[in-house]
Amino acid sequence: MLHTTPRNILTALLFAAFLFGIPTQASAGTLKIGVVDVEYVILKSKNGQKAKKKLKRIFGKKQKELNKQQEELLALKKQLENPSGVTTPDKRKKMLINYQQGVLKLQESFVKHQQSLAKKEVELMKPILKKLESVLTAHAKAGGYDLLLTRSQHGVVFAKPTYDITKAILAKMDGG
Image 1: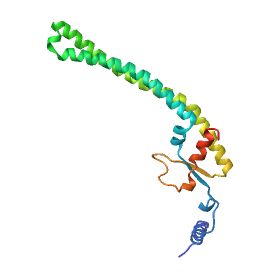
Image 2 (image 1 turned 180 degrees about the horizontal axis):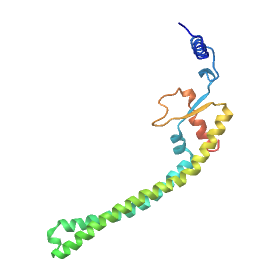
Image 3 (image 1 turned 90 degrees about the horizontal axis):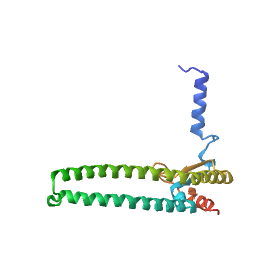
Image 4 (image 1 turned 90 degrees about the vertical axis):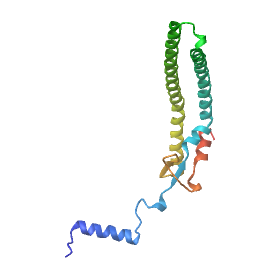
């Protein structure tokens, strides 16, 4: 026995619309989509290249400091491993303590270095990301896009090349 409740009527109408393909407001045919590789744009843009060089310079300077500490520890370790190099047990004990403290200090320096680099990267990327957001928004509005997607490791797996707007966004990021 069929009941004609408003819910059943609505369900039947929705089924008929689906079955006969009555266009809806968000049909795929009218949706304009763009895909952009944000990581590529950031790395290849002029400002992204400058930030990368600056980070590399900072990293190199701090890495030299860490390498120097590590070389000093390796020299101390060689002395400890060579029994003829240590004259007394007390001297050996002091060297071992210095070595262990040096290893801890090196580890702390490494962690601080990593944190400092991460902080500097965020600082350098902030204006780039802000500009990218405004470029993407302006491009989407000007191009009549309904949806922009980002191509990344966890994002878009495949898109036809006609949807890829990466080069256009990169050109606009660099003032083109």
